[in-house]
Image (cartoon, rainbow, N blue to C red; front, top):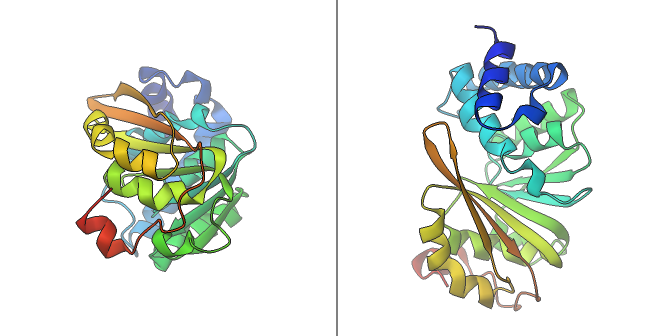
Amino acid sequence: MSFKESYFRILKENGLERFATDELAERFEELTQRLTDFNSQVNLTAITDPEQIILRHYADCLMAADAFPHGARVLDVGCGGGFPSIPLAIVRPDLQITGLDSTAKKLVFVENTAKEMSLSISTLTGRAESLSHTSLRESFDVVTARAVAALNVLSEWCLPFLKVGGVMIALKGSAGDEELAAARKGIAILGGGRPTLSQYALADMGRSLVVIPKVSATPVQYPRPNGKIMKKPL
């Protein structure tokens, strides 16, 4: 089965028909080739089979694509090899995306791919708990993250970057409801409003999408140093 055939089948099986176009299939096939080539030198992902890449990386990211407001300035915290940054930039060229990661060598792939595929992505190397105490604080419309940390930790990394009126969009697994229950108190402390949780199936995998509005400024003492965040989440 060709890449395009697999791409069309997987997207249609998961309710993503709107992204099953020849143009997007070609774009994602190019991304897959770049990803597998770079992955042979730097470990970006343990998933190397093209069909699994389509399902577990592309379709997973695309399930959240409609949650992003038009023209938003987006920060992807812990973007790693570019997920969800790159799939989002391919299907949502209106977004202005910054990929943040503490591992510079992974961002080389994101930078090169963005340049060579003409995607609206910039990159930033550093740690979220430090950079959110700079001019980047409360400067983004959306902060997103996928497969980075439990929500009670992630919210302290992400919410300080958000403008009041912005939203945090977290792509989580099947235990998203449990993570949200543990994070609610901290979310309120950090200026977050009432979260919404959407749960769905992606093939045989349970997935969750947590959307948290920013309703008030984050108190200046947050985020704390990372050792304190990890030892005692809010």
